[in-house]
Each structure stands twice: as structure tokens, then as C-alpha cells.
Length: 220
Image (tube, rainbow, N blue to C red):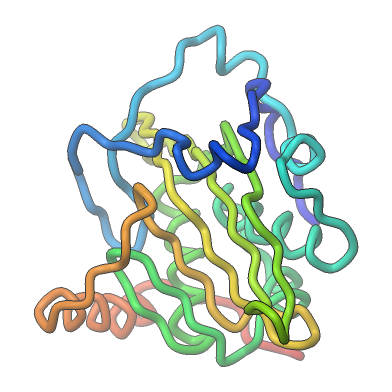
């Protein structure tokens, strides 16, 4: 992987009975920018920011422990959220025809989802994981091949340096080889918008951004 993420605050993880009660509320949505995952949440104090831990430390402290390929998957996705996309991440962990979805976009295939991540890095060159907790890691045939985790991410807007904290529920669907077939970034843990008007805008975003953001060719 590329550069390791900055250290993050020590977390108190919730037992099974309390996982779903984990606070993920937002006072409002203050802004939506391009293909970025951008909404509002509480700010952290300077003291909290000074004791950040790397993503690998988050995973070691999560309710559900991951190892092997699944641990690599989450570390790779965390690198993307930390504005550090690389061709190796996509070729190692993503299917070329995978789907990426958040409230702003619905992307089908590498040519649509990769510009979302490279665009995020251009808009927010500094991004770090403040908190992370893996909720579940399930396997077929009894349950979907899926990883679900909560995260809190701090983004710093390019040039003006404005910091914004985003909380979301990340749902990763995998194939039989533990390659990403679909990733959903659900702000505030809410279902993604699906009404015709919003769906059209999300698809338009996915179609337009590749014209604005160049990405490396898929070599695999």
C-alpha cells in the first residue's frame, strides 16, 4: 500500500447488542461538491486530532476482526477514502466492472468509479480516518459475501484548508474470490437516494466526471 494513514483517536467499541445504536447523526447537510463524499458532522478538538492512529490499528480494535484478503480489502478502501488512490489498489481489490454508489453518484465500471476517487484526491488532498469499526464480515451461502463498517473521516478542502468531518456506513460486496463487486458509501447510514430525479443526477455525475478527471489505464 502507499503511505500509511495518520494515527486516530482511541475508540470505545460497542458490543453486539449496541452496535446499531452507534451515533451516526448529522445536524444537516451543508455542502455537496463534485464527486466527493462531503457532508456535515461534529468537529474534533485539537487534542483528539493529535492522537490519531493508523488504519491497521483501527482494524485490530474493531468488534469484528479481519485477516488475509478481507483485511487487505478494507485497508485498500481506506486508502481511497484517505485520498491516496493507486492503480495497484484497484487491480488488487476491485473487479473492473464493479459498482460504486454514494448519494452523489452511481458508477458502473472502472471508467466511472476510478474518477470519483481520483477526483476526491484532487479536491481534498488531505483526508484521514478518525474512527473505524467493522460491524460484520459474512460469507456465502448462508449470508452475502460482504463487509460492513462504520467510519468517520476528516477531509481538508484544497487551497482554503477548510476541514469537514464525514460519518458514513460503508458496505462492500465481494465475489467468491473476495474482489469488490459493489461498494456503497451511505452517509449517516441512510439508504442511497433512488427517486428518478436524484438517480438521474447521480448517473450524470458518474458520466461527466471521467471527462474532467484522468485516471491511469487498467493494466490487469
